[in-house]
Image (cartoon, chains in turn purple, red):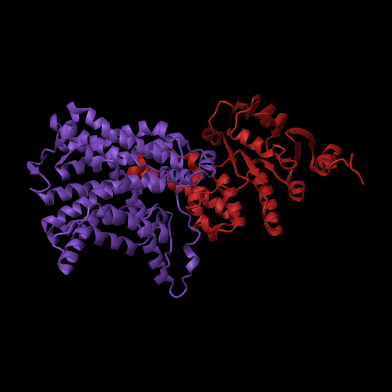
Length: 365
Length: 258
């Protein structure tokens, strides 16, 4: 069991709780930076994929985990970021400008959409955002002169510092671009959480009425939360466009929106860690299923067996297991295991009992 | 001079008149209580001052500024803080974070500086923390500083909510049943705290309370309400002895068959 002796208010404001924790994260960062030399190109691509999921995961976590507003429409905002980035690049805007701009555009679009939509609560909000997701698909098809309609767009290579960066051509460079975006979003997110705005988000999540009585402007703060969430989502969308190479309206369908929400629920709502854990599960799941399929078919000699919809099925199963047995997600489970060992043998089963789940619907706001 | 002026206010919910032409003035430095049976409209008066409800008629002024044009979230910036009858804390946050939300009305930083966590934001955080630490010392919450609200007993939550209101550095404190659900000892503490809030901090207090023991101990004046109407106003002793008040609480006994 560790006791942290605090000597200054800075000890509560800092990024890390104590020095050992800081060392752990530095080791993790060093590992992530060294990854291109540890993995082959295929798995590096998968790692990049996980990082892209993590960016949008952080965006959605800010909105759902920290501000308590559900969104089933984030695929639409990924689409906005993706198309904005590629359309700007096609018109000669360099990537280094187009990427942040696409985040900004998505953020502004998100904040504008949020103003009417975030008047709704709980399940109604979920339905309204779901409608946005459905609408976005149609709008992409209709806006053919810009979006290429059903045939979609092809991402041009990223022209950066004299290099032509593509996912397959230069996987390491693309990995680092993604990593830099991840770190930038993480930096801003972590800082916000220890500042007044982050506390205002949590206040809205837990009790709108008393947040208001403390001087939090609910409408504005929710719109800011949605806007920031969409900014991260837009950045992820832009990177996804380059990652996928070619994309159309079907890339950003409702299943993606649902997957995004599942990701943060599986990871653990209300923590940045949860976004990353969820991203790892979602990012690697298709590979795990593919490997599992190969193993079973070689064991039983089925030949190459494909079951349509197996991915969605496994996904739903995992989600069910989590909702039933670990509503706090992977991060919550990790906290329990850690507390168990820290307090051994004094851990009680009820210690985490009172932690209620999020997404209050019809309670007093 | 009166700090809070509540003039001829009427609020209707459909056919029900929740507050019926109620007027009262709370003077600066006063401890003022609203009493009355359930459904008398006491909490509704609070919600009117917090701007959660719009009155049909009447005017509410705070330090000679009209309150009625403001949004609920603008009310705290004038220096009005409140607690809730059914504790409305931020359950998933620590006591410290809850108290820091009370500093929201003093926050000057903006989104961008906060995302970069510039030195000015850090400095400001230190200032907020100093105010919050004073509140923690005052209410003796040191042991609970880093505890999550979700795991705290009721009595402590009640005090944390008082602390959060104090952290806003208000001029007027609205306490909605500060002693409800507290043990005898805890409500004794509450009496001392309210006295100190009045004397040391110079904060005016308006409260809704059923515990006449607490009301007589700390209040300068009392307004008794029943069915949204004013019954009596005066010192706690006067109001308690007022025939209309006794009638409202105990009934008249008329028309009863033996």
